[in-house]
Length: 183
Image (cartoon, rainbow, N blue to C red):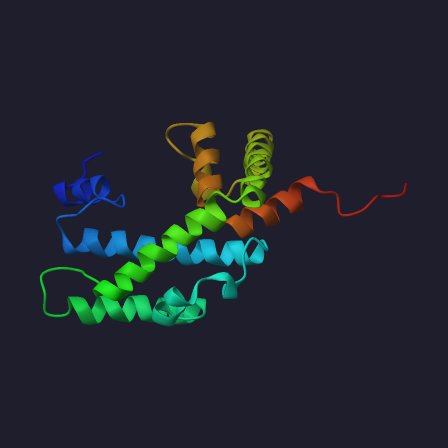
């Protein structure tokens, strides 16, 4: 691949400890952190691992008491603290609350036995989807079907593009009979 230095720098510094050299890289890094933590909270509440009110008030009082409030706080904080600067930053209290919320998620969601118990189900679902599409390549949308690296890569890329909800919906659609046919 013919990637620019800026793109390579952004990729190399995307992890939590990284510090991208470009403003774009910094925006992507913070945006991903915000998206992941809030998506994971949403998944955990839908999966009955935690409830919104389980999140400690010392975080919600700063970040907000709902997904939309958290997103609003985090995004506006970045914009207002970065304006006029050659950097993309958050205020110390909002940044610390986000970091503490992340620690809370590790303690209560990411390592939770109930949540971890779902990993085998998810793994089986992904394997089943892969095997289904290997046998039914025409069920893969055309724009995903023609990967130059071959059929397996095309299917892997297609499944990787699926959201969690879409993958579960597709799995249910393809693998679970909707009813018995009587002949």
